[in-house]
Structures are given as structure tokens and as C-alpha cells.
Length: 286
Ligand code: DHB
Ligand code: FE
Image 1: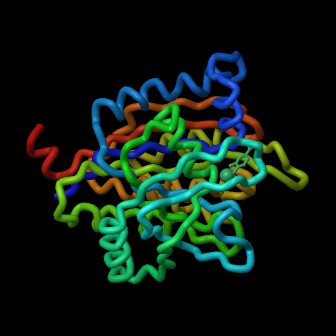
Image 2: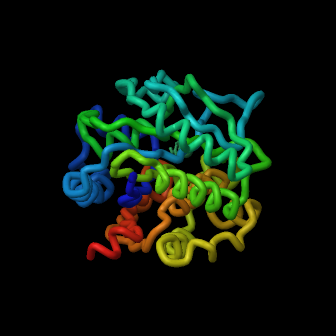
């Protein structure tokens, strides 16, 4: 049976791609952020995932404001990146796992989630930047199942809805008959606002609260409405919905094993968190 080994959540700021292209990882501005990935590299080398389910939000490369699915699940054998205008190198393609995608899709629909299925899907910086951070040099060898959550055009799904979406994905993975070690990724956040009067807004106290509650008490965070979240975390801070879905997919006993928080990277409070998931079988074996 497939096993959910844990989750990685990380910021996806495009300028990270410029820093990588210009090899600025050790510059004083960038070092505190990139050092936060040393543990992630160690964890990935130790845990050896076979596939990653990636929750992120599309920023207009794949869906635009005229057609915006609340939840969209990729079911392709390959996901290509394209130039979004950030002047970062176009990433190499990422392989898919259509069989796992369809299993997740069937389970989500059976669980009454009205999703959009995408047999073709482009992936933007919200997928490629985290992939390149986790596997420097674009050296990933594992396929992904990308799941896109609308954090862009209102009305957005609630925190509770995204936590429940993740839980449904987690149940689907746990019932997948193939012996796969599955990692879950949530990208974006933490607090940031890219435009309007509050451009540059960051809220360290609220970010801290979110990270403190994520592993052990994610339901606490569902008390916030989307309106509250924009107020507390900025208009783009709602990308935390991807983190909530990631957390929901960890259906076992969850503990935080790594956290890095650094302000700012570009306009964003940059955070990287690793959560370990010990499922029923893992608990018994320990
Ligand atoms: C920035 C952050 C984002 O989440 C994004 O999608 C684009 C830009 C930024 O801080 O520059
Ligand atoms: Fe973003």
C-alpha cells in the first residue's frame, strides 16, 4: 500500500529562480533562506519519496481570470513550464503519474469534491521553484501529481474546505494499492501582498501562529474567514490554503521536524517547514 511519509511547505517567490540562476545562494541576502533547505535535502535523501503530490496555486500561466477552477487536479504524464515574464529560466518538464492522479480524482469525486480534471496542465513558478529548491540543479527523479487551488480570484475556498480537500487526498493515497512512498508539498505564503495600498505587508506574529498550529492543531486555523486571512496575512498570504491542503493530506500522527522563517524574500515572508507523518503501520512498526 502507498504510505504518506510527510510534507514540505515552502514559499515560491519567483526571484528565488533568479538567485539560483546567478548562483547567489551564499550572498548575505539569500543565505538565511537557502540554508533552510539543507535539512530538506537531508530529509529527502533519508526518506526517498517515490512521488510528490503538490498543492499550489496557478498565477495565470495555466488558468486565467476568465476560467478559474476552485480545485484542479493534473492527470498528465508530463507537466511543462513556460516563460511567465519573471525573467527566470524555463524549468525542465516534470513527469506525472497518471494512475495515481486518476485514483485521487476518483476518490475526490466520490467524496463530493467537484474538481476539474486536467489531462494537459502547465506548471508555473509555484511548482518549479519549490521543485528546484528541493532538488537543486533540477535533479528531481520523481513524478508529481499537481493539485491547483484557486487563491487568486474571489470567491476562494475556505481554510476548512482546503483542509478537508487534503484529508480526502490523504485517504485516497492511503488506499492506493501500489507500494509507494508519497510526499506532500504545499507551496506559497507566508504573509505577503504584492499590490495595492498594503503592498509589502508582512505579519510575523500571524505567520508564527500559523506555523505553530499547522502540525498539531490545523483545525484552529479554520476559524479565520478568507476576509480575515487577507486582513492578517495580505492579499497573497491566502496562498496558505495550499499549506492547509498539504497538512490535511497527512492523515497520521504529524510532527514538525524543521522550520525556517526569514523576512523578507522579495515582498514575502519566506518560510520552509517539514512535517513528518507517521501512519498506523509506521506507528505499529516503531
Ligand atoms: C512574489 C511572491 C509570490 O507568491 C508570487 O507568486 C510572486 C511574487 C514576491 O514576493 O515577489
Ligand atoms: Fe505566489
